[in-house]
Image (cartoon, rainbow, N blue to C red; front, side, top):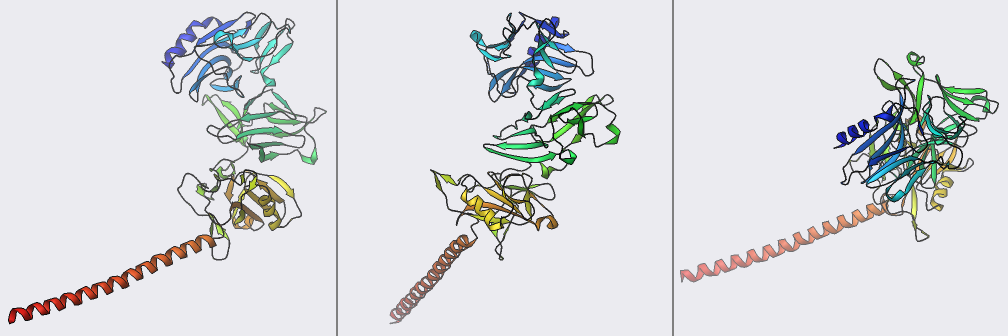
Length: 475
């Protein structure tokens, strides 16, 4: 059904497929399936730019998103989606979806009864046509060719060749089945990757120009990602790490929606596909969501749940388990309950650190004070203490990885747990275990004593009865 829908639309709208612009009054209608189909994708291509290979194409798409149908305007480079009107906010519809460039110059997506789900907001600005530029920038222009709206001003998770992003702008990507999201932030002193979870924002990679030079904007050039100052002078560049591909022009930069990794891509004519020539993070354990919450990424690159078990010397160790719900009984309980702080304590994990860089409270504090920072904040779940970098606190136990012994000596990663609960110094659990064991042992002893005594009395009585019976028979 999906294939038939796609083919019928492509044939029906062939007249618009090779165009690089559409005029005022243009309309394109897609029918939305009446019955729900998992994984359904229906597309109608309305424009294509053949100046480069692979070419840029503009499509109107209807897709299955979590049990509903979403309609959006999209830009493709070959088979790679590089922009979507529904990146931040989905337009869910039924029966049909209409793309319209109205006579007053507003580009819209509409559902049944002319309900507007997305718009460019360019009504009354003299827009004459929708145009696709050779860079992949989708623009609305007036009669003089002046741009009134452009997709480059609304970045998603991809940055194209020639696209410019200024300070305070960003790329974002959204992992499936997660409440967190990734972002590439352009800041005056650096560009950085962030994991955003609720009110918490943690960086996990950064790139800084030398000599403390400030960044005004970044731009993707043919040789890599370029950083510019306010006088438009290039002050730094991220280029392919492989010398063999440095002569291949970069086509786009992408922030992965599953890994959160940043990659530069070039097109390989011999392989007929896009390939990465640079990536910010090269090992699995450096990825922020390499493991689930309360999981630790080991030196072998595998994930193990953090078990807060105390050793004889009073420090905790992390052990492996196959449980899929790491931290069950800790993270699910929370430490903010009706405005009252749950009694908690900090347990230190040796030999582990975090790829996340949290909010630094102070440089001149002790390890104990660092733990107290977390205890005093009911939203805090972990703290990382470094004698060199100070104290950082976290609202989630994520991005934890095992480190070499040499690096672990100056680090202390502490996890907040309910006091006296799971992993609480091991003393409460030990006492409970001892009481249960003593009770069981005492019960067995009592059972054995009374059972033996009962068996002795019954046996004695039986022997006495047998003796009397034999004497009677002989008389």
